[in-house]
Image (cartoon, rainbow, N blue to C red; front, side):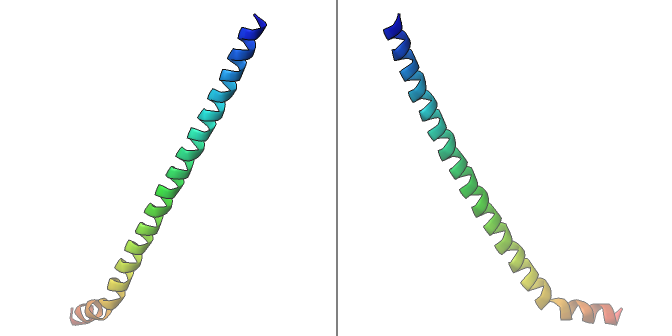
Length: 66
């Protein structure tokens, strides 16, 4: 009775701790992936903006011709 309850309670404590550790690791991985994706999208946007600015004079010349 009491020993079985203590054993079960101990196992439950360990399981909850393990589950908490797994969720913590998952949250870290999601955060790292989101951070990497955010950084990649920022770099892509900056590259686009650089090219857009470089081609501005060409676009303006075309508009002035029309």
